[in-house]
Length: 504
Image 1 (cartoon, rainbow, N blue to C red):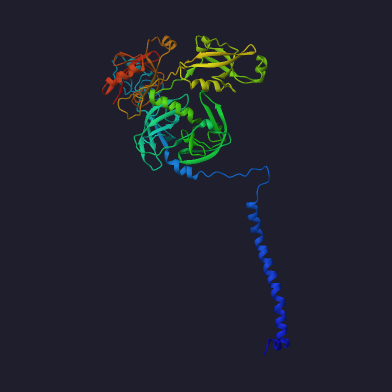
Image 2: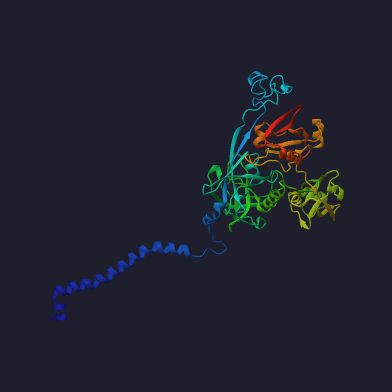
């Protein structure tokens, strides 16, 4: 039967007609459903790829994962132990009976000893074993042989310093040097081929730039936190460090850890937070790495830090003061007083002068002057541009050395044989008059064997093994000649006593 005859059949014609109508309608329905289902996805894609409105910059959040993976192993956890002796009698001002009387455990010389009066509830009774105090912080390795930088307040006064790496290796560290003014310390572990950080340039850091901190907040090792640079050149406490202010979350345990820029370079050492609660509140401060490296180099070579001194007391220039002195705008450092006999007085600087430039560089704020002067070596001539009597003039000043009363000491780690664990300085003339002594060294810090023997900060070392002590070199020489113990003549208040100290 031909196709034309089949179409003429009524039933076949009806089926074919329905099919002819149904196919376009079905196609239209499927097409509509497909479009309806595809519309949200298409809209989402459009939203993702469409350009931002003119004038609004696009923002991409940084990914710090590769940086943490690469430089995290060079960040270390530092655990410290400090043995503290509160007094020689260990009992405050309690009476003889509680301390065993004259021949009790507090008096090693017996009741008939000429030193017995010193042990009657007074400052020279023998202390019990000092109680250990534990603390921790962070640091970072700057040399493959184990040289580490951290904060001074992390290791200052520690009798034992333990460094732990991310792979759980532990080392006993030696304190190379401590500078409390800048809060910088250098410690050393015995190692080789250790992971290190890359040192950057903090001067190139920009406000608003992303930064990363790695450390051990509350003991949680190798924790990474990030934020931006909030400000630069913040002056706190000593005035010798132009701190970097950030909003990076920093907490106890982060101290001494590195602050990285987006290139993976260390630009700062995390040091302080501003807090009313003891925890992070959105404001953190880091020591610029340029300042830290300069201080660290001096600690490695000499054991202490020398800073330039101008010999002036300064204050900030307000708009009212600028108007009073006829300055075009409030800037520079106003000299409020001049140290008698100091470098500034010798150069002719007077109270009321406004120092506008140092070596040709403008001083926008008074806080910039002490930071820059301190970074210049004593004995260096600097050129100052000062404002006086509504006119500028140039003055050349030869800087003196800022008196740093903390000298290179005989300290070391607790296990470093032959060391006493003392940080000392010479007495000033006024202190010698007040104590009625000549020479001697004031104890600034006592740790290790010295602390165990009961020596405290503020004690005066007058002699060692019967020989007068007038300098740290005298004390160091006496220690080197001693075997087993060294007898130090200590003065505390008006009392004097020889105290045996173990030297290893």
